[in-house]
Amino acid sequence: MKTTNFKLNPLRVAVMGAALMAANNVAMAAPVTKALDFVCPFPLIGDQTITANITADYPEQLVLDASGAATLGEVFIDTVNIIPEKGRLGLSIVDATTITGTATSLNTFRTVVGDITNNADLVIPPTTIPTDEAGSFEVPASGTAPAQAFDSSHAGVVTLTVDDLVMDLKNLKENGQVAPAPVGEFVADCALAPGQDNTLVTFEVVGGVVIPEIPADIEVDQTSVDFGTIQLGQQTSKTIIITNAGEMDLEISRVDIAGADASVFSQNNQCSVIPGKSTCAVTVTYNASEEGPQNAVLTIESNDEVDPAVDIQLSGSGEIEVFPEIDVVQSVDFGTIAAGNSKTEVVTVNNTGGAALTISNVAVSGEGFTGVNNCSTVAAGASCSVDVTYSASIGQGTGAVTILSDDADEAETVVTLTGFGEEVIVDPCIADPDSCTPPPPGPGVELNYNVNGSSYIAANHGTIPLSGVITNDFDLASGTFVGNLLLDSTQGSFEIIQGWSRYLATAQVEFEPVGETVGTLIDGKLTAVSTAYVKLPKVTKTMFGWINWKIGGGENCRTKEPVTFTVNSLEGEDFNPLLGGKVTGTYDMPELENCGALTSILSLKMKGSGNTIELDMSPILD
Image 1: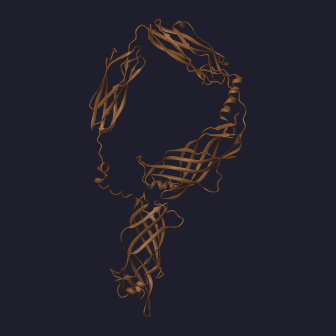
Image 2: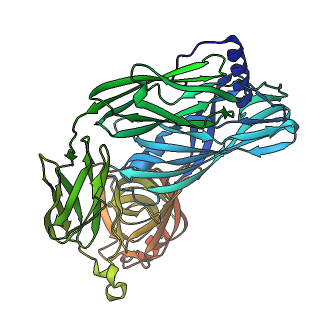
Image 3: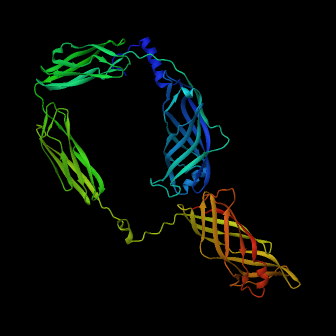
C-alpha cells in the first residue's frame, strides 16, 4: 500500500486490473459445496459411515497467460464431518472427551491429457465429544489444497474429484492424556461410499491475453521521520526506502530538502533509475545545531504519473545536555525444573536516555545461577543482554543480577532471581531394565452385563431358561477380555420312558464354572468361551397331578466332563460394548454320572451334540 496520497488514474486502474487478473490467472472464484459419505474403520466398533460436508472457493475459469501457463493458487478447504452415534459411544468406552488430529483428502484433477494428484492436508482442531446428548456430532477440519500449474495441453474442461479420506486421530481424556489403545490413537483409511458423484468442482482452462506492463509506481516506507532528541553538536541518521511497485522503470529526477531548518538536515542517495519491483535507499542525517525542535521537508520527484512528487516530513530536537537512563526488569522467575537440569533466561538492559550508558560491572550471584553478558557501552535507545542460567538443585533457589552503570539516579540496579528444583525419582527399571521385572499390565476397562436367554437340549427336545451375570475386564489394546459367567439355577422338563411307564420329569439344573470366561472384541465382532460342569441336584416326576417324587439327581450328579460354551455376536451385526447385544452358539453335552439308579436314562436325555444357546447381554450401569 502506498504511504503517500493516492489519486485514481483511469489508465493505471485499467492496467493494474488486467495485471491482477493475469497474475492470478483466474476469473472470479465461486464457492462450491459437496457432501460425501465415507466408510471408515473404527477400533472395537468396526466400520462406520461419516459424512464430510466440504466447502471451498474454486474459479469458474483458469486463464493461460501469453506463454501458455497458468497457476491455480492454494485453495482453502473447510469441512464439517458428521460422526455417527456408534462412533461417539466407541470413544466414550475409554473416557475420551476430545478428538483431534489431521486428515488428508485424496483429490485428483481430471484433465484432457491425464490425471493430476492434488491432495489436501487438513487439521482437526481439538473438538469436545458430547456426553450429555445422544446422536451424531460434528468434527471440523480445515486446510489448504496445494497450488497447481497448468499449461496449454490442459486447455478444456477440468474436473476435481474427491477420491478418498485418511484420518490420523488422537483422542484425549479429560485430563489431557491420550486415551488407551487402540482407540487413543489410530489411523482410519476411509473409502468413498459407492454410488456417489464425487466431483467437487468443474472449471475450464482457456487461452489468455497479453497484459501490458504496469507503469512506474513510487512508494516510500514512511511519510515522516522523527530523529528524536539528541545533544547539541551530535548527529544521527535514518534511512528511507523508495520502492517501485510497478513494472516499468521509475526514474528519480530530484531528491531535495527544503523548509525552515533545511540546513540542519542532509541526504545521500544513489537513486537514479529503479527497475520494476526494486528498491533504493535515501540516507537522511540530522545535525542538532540549536536547542529545541527543528523541521524540514524531503521531496522526491519522479516519472510516476500519479505521484510525481512525494513529500516526507523531517523533525528533530536539540538538547543542551542529555543523560543515560537504565531500564531493566525487576525480577526473573525460572519456574520449576527438574533437579540436575538447567534453564537460561535473557535479562535485557535498555538505555532509554539520550546519552550513551556505560556499564561498569555485571555480577550474577546465588547458588546455581551463572551468567554471561555483552554489556559495556549502550548507545541511546539501544540495549544489551545478560544471559542468566539456573542449574537447579532440589529446593528453592534465589539469586540476583547486580548491574553498575553511570545512570545518575540508579547507579546500582538489582534484578532478583528465583527458581525451584524439583526432585526427580528415577524408576530403577528404566535405569537398569535387567534388574527388575516390570509390573503386570492393568486390568483395562471393566464392563459387566446381565444375561438372559435359553438353551435348547437336542436329546430331550426341551428348552431351559437361562439368567445370570457376566463380569469382564477388557484389554482394549489387544481387543481381549477375561471374566466370569455366573448362571443362575434353572429347571427343565422332559419325558422319561422306564419299562412300560411314560412320565414327565422335571430336572433342577445348575452350572459350576471351571476357570474364567475368555474372548475377543475386534471390529465389533464378539467371541466368548466359558467352561462349566452342568449339574442336576434334583430330578422329580409328578404323581397324582401334584406330588413331585424324586427319582434321581444328587449333590454329585453332573456331567463327567466340563461343557464348553462358545458364543458369538450375530452375523452381520456389530456388538457395541456399551449397549450390549445378542450372542448365540452351539455345544456338546457329555454324559452324566453319580445321578442315582436312573443315571443312564437321565444321561440319554441330556448328552449329545446339536445343543444351542442364545443370550441377551445388557450392560449393568453404575
